Length: 158
Image (cartoon, rainbow, N blue to C red; front, side, top):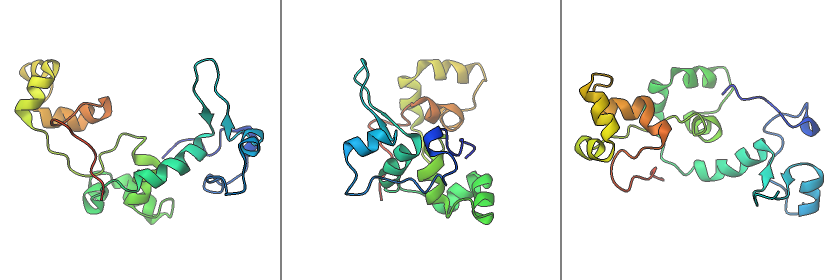
């Protein structure tokens, strides 16, 4: 939640929620001139203004299942942000911030045997007492590292 309000100097002073997806009338050239998109460089990758990206991604991220009660209990700072009006709900927080902060949207149960077999480094760390279990590793670091808690894991949609 502590990301900069507006890193693009062309958009300084604007509310981060004020710049959203282009309207039906915006053209590629308009977005390029407004520095919302930057054409591909030699790598072939487009660059987009970060809040434009967040706005586009929010539509997809809002489809991920959020256990609101669990999320607010797990992340009390989100409850505080709701109470102070910085975010509307746990769902809103997750779609705008939590996903990028690698927060879990709901309790995800690790299949311990599979996790140990898939990640021998974690099995070794547990044997050394660094972690209590695959579950504790996943919650502390594994999710953030992109490790799977069980085969074919996908964040659930509603």
